[in-house]
Length: 323
Image 1 (cartoon, rainbow, N blue to C red):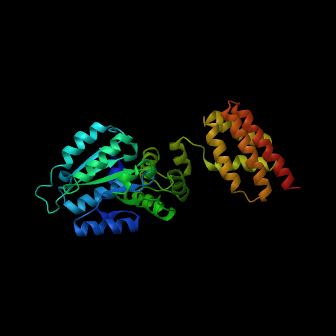
Image 2 (image 1 turned 90 degrees about the vertical axis):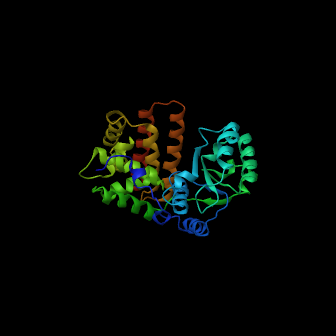
């Protein structure tokens, strides 16, 4: 297994290496071909390729020395107006030297964290220095960017990767690192990362550090510090069979032996209840009970007692279903 952060090791270097986001990548390639681009606004969830996309574009546009022509700032760390007046203006006012491309690129990550005053100053800077600098703003939420800036940018919305692409990425890294990841492990990483490839990559690396032979769902949930769905299914099935004491022992094992949070357990119980092959009206009743218990837990009720009530409710519903 190689050392270093896999998220950086496997970060695509060129636009051709980007994973998914096909339409966006196609448009970015056209900017490289024309050696020109407008101001850009990339928005979308974490780990979907926003920062990777613009760095790949810069490499394709300027070549190996691309870092001489870009400046990366993180607006969550440098959010004030002085950053715009000093760092940004000093970089933006000078043209690119010894390059076929006449402008440089300023990348401002987490731009939706900029203060309102800083955004208004940035808008004016974007207008003045358009000839020598292109601005690429990156954030999770476009609504936190003022309208005058949005109107000056070409907006690209990055969506979470779908199941096939996300699992393909995980398998790609696992093959390169010679890891034996089982289907249930792959599914667990996908469910935990929800389309965030950076999170999926980091989770796979953490799992590989603890388990080399076979990476399964138990490994993944152990790394996450969360309850395994298999244990929760066991608890639910025992409850529905009317085996209250056995189900309660599984519950106590999760709470006490494994030290898992009641919030995580009840969240997974809710998810698994919705997947049960039982009549819809029983799902409604159980969901209502889960919601009530979840509320009680937020008010400081004892976790073991409240979750035992839920197990008892499962037993009652199971008895009704089985007649």
